Length: 332
Image (tube, rainbow, N blue to C red):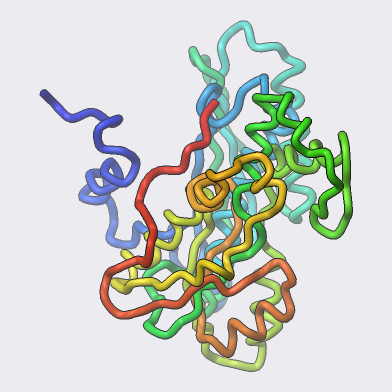
């Protein structure tokens, strides 16, 4: 019986693809060489497919557009890059409502304006399934590129933001009756919310991810007088566990996780019950950053970015403490 994509999974498929690619493949975006003096261009691409990455049940047209932009911008942030421009190709069935595609472009443009960049081109084709394919270009100083293969033994593992809330939002969108579990006010970001506002805020984590360019700004502020930029990492779009595993694999190191330090939001505990840790590790599509850096730098970093927390350390060997490797489980 011949192997199928389902049998291999994403990581198995990527192993096949890599034999046909340049040796530079392996980070959130590709380093394309020098552009401005002392700067490198980085390029990333992502596709969103109806029924796989969005659906009319969970995502408005404007939110589809926002997500299409944000997932690519998140890859640039994960490389430490500033966005330059984007192009988008769309595949549309002939019966696609004009109002739907206009909404997509409105949401896409809103996200780009928020992060100071613009759409500069693309393509349109007929397709049996609504499909968006986005390519984003960014630039980063050649000495400040964040990559996966540079983690060192003794580095702290730092996570930004909260994981599991995108999964929580998706579950609420599919199962509105779950909102009855959220009877007590909860803190979301800097606000205490309850009722419909609370449900809407949790759903927004899924519908409108936020690229973590603020994280990069904090790192630059801390390291502005240093020549060294000892940061490795990636974004957690495929799940927190996957990000830790990929960094370790690329850097040929292991990891020890500080399980008691791993934050689990009360909304995730409430909705997921005894699966809360699974949602945090494998829920996926949180689009936060997982970074490795020297411990003293990590302490400064978490002191200046309130959403960041040290969740582990890089160790010798290739063992990852307590993590089961499996794919993120967001489904439409």
